[in-house]
Length: 139
Image 1 (cartoon, rainbow, N blue to C red):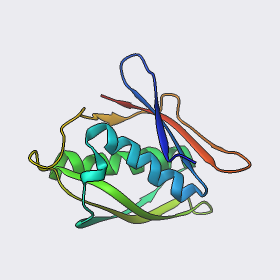
Image 2: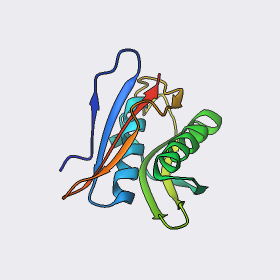
Image 3: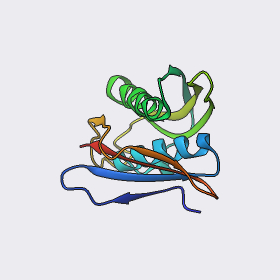
Image 4: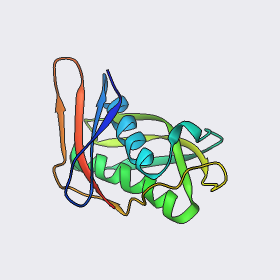
C-alpha cells in the first residue's frame, strides 16, 4: 500500500493519504504535505516538536494537525519527515512528535510553499483494509 498520492485540483494541491491505522494515515497525510514543500527523503529526523491537540471530530483534528505542522514551518522553517502519534477517538485528542530539521537550501529542494490546510474535499474514510484521508492544501 502506498503512503500517499497527489490528485489534480484547479489551483491548489489535493492529497490522498493511506494507513492501516488512523495514526498511520495522519502521519502519511503530514508526509504528503511536506513532500509538496521539499523532498522529504532528504529531511533527517534530527529535532522534534511535541504536539498536543483537541478536536471536535476527526476532520477537525486532522485540520489542526496539519495547521500545527505548517505553523512550525512558517515560524521556524522546520520541515518534517517522521511522525509518531496517538489518537484517542473518545476524547478526540492527538498527541505526538514530529521529527525533522530546519530547512536548509543547500540540502533541501525548495518546491511549493503550502499556505494553509483547508476543509475543501476533506474526508476520512475507513475501508476494509485501511483508512483513506482526502484533503486539499492551499498553495
